[in-house]
Amino acid sequence: MAGTVTVDVAGPAKGRGGREFIGFPYRLFRGCSQWVPQFRSDMRAILDRRNTFFEKSMGEFFVARRGGETVGTIAALDNVPFNAYHGFRIGHFYFFDCIDDTEVSHALFAAAFAWMREQGLETVQGPAGFGMMGSGILVDGFAHRAAMTMMNWNFPYYQRLVEAEGFAKHGDLFSAFVDPAAFRLPDRVRRAAEIALKRGSFEVPEFRTRKDLRRYAQAIGRVYNESFEAHGDTFAPLSEKEIEEVADGLVAVADPTLIKLLLSRGEIAGFLFGFPDLSAALRRARGRKNPLAIIDILLEYRRTRGLIVNGAGILPKYQRLGGNALLYSVLERIGTQRRFLSVEAVQIADSTELMLADLKTLGARITKTHRVYQRALAGTP
Image (cartoon, rainbow, N blue to C red; front, side, top):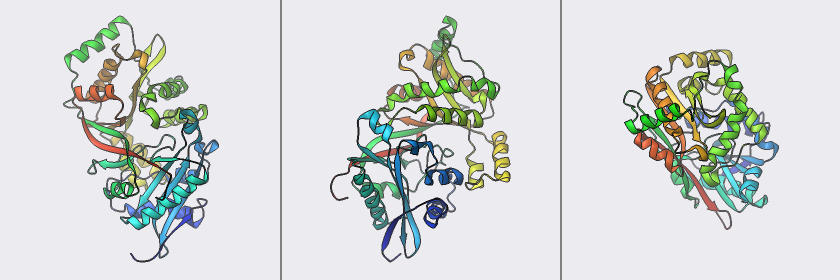
């Protein structure tokens, strides 16, 4: 494609730029079976600043065009609570999608960098920084489909475009595949789980209904904050309102029997969140929440043979006391007793050495790597 690249602010969701920002990925990934779209209504809420993120933080959205055709998008973010928590002045980029053209990607990042400099930010990190959405550029495992909308899929050339802007690896997030048919706890892990139960140190209550789960929903968010501190400087605690939204969303969409809490004397010590893999139905919905799409998604709950584990953690003070083993025994039971033919655990930070070691012991294999990048903002990009 020939012609000058221009980059403009996307503007509101109903405007031309907003529509292009939301619609561009559908054209870019057309025919790509690994890509799973975000819901369009969620993206409209983000562009119109109706997402909780914008109650305390700021951001701008950019669209790149060449010859009147949209060729790329990017968001520049100032996550104020994140920076306040860590004492940083980091800007984040997100929603980076682009054709395979360094001129386009350079123009997009130049616009994002300029906005960040105006906010007084000093470093750039990403893709990251936007609430509970998954982070990182996929750099390995392109043959595998995205885990619903939890972790993105992108073309291999994204890594080259990002690194051409001076970014270097800041940290990796892994996805691991577990084969339920071959998944068997090592004897020592099984014994540790049995001892923990026999001593009464821990219990794992069964949730049969959403009402059962709702009693613990708020506490889950608070435990999430404590357990994910191991993710280091890519993590910032959820606000009370974010906890409330996550809890409401979890109760609304979860299969209660797949949400497992580890209790110690009535207090939550750990958790394991399992979700039926609805990726196929989400692809067919193409980001829409019309009645037919919703019916198809609900039917997919029964049809799917995949389980996604997005959230598993033990509070530091309960680690190495048998709680980890007990959660893994629960995962084994789910995998063998239910219909699932595959289990995928996602968003496993490379800094969580204990969990990575445990997964290796359990026979899981890393299938995908998402990389979060960082670079200094000073100077010419």
